[in-house]
Length: 132
Image (tube, rainbow, N blue to C red; front, side, top):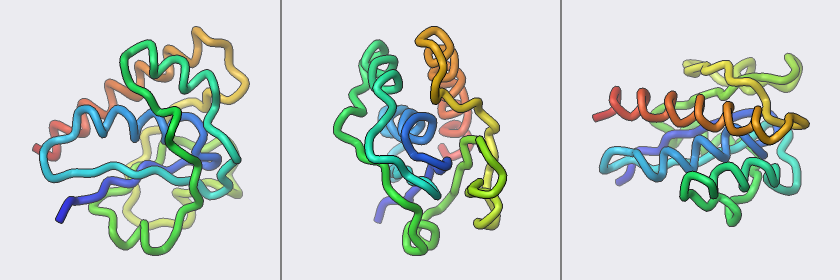
């Protein structure tokens, strides 16, 4: 049985999707990523898809999803990517969350989204070391 790591944010359109993509690439054996949001939007941020393709990871087939109780219960660890507003911040509703406080790429220019992507990659790599 694979251990699930849940990456969460509000819209599940950028940060958590990129984290899911990186974790899928770097995770130690026996782990599986998933991502979700408290207020998911209908599509992934196109710039997030673009910057991930630049590093050889295709997240274009991933879909924003709403956080469910079963996702929370089945997860070995839950990582909150950061919050853009306090009232829908996932960390307010879920206990024992690792909070990375990564800026939201929504509405940011391409170079900023690349910087956010690189921050997420570093955080995922460091996180994977704690699981191995």
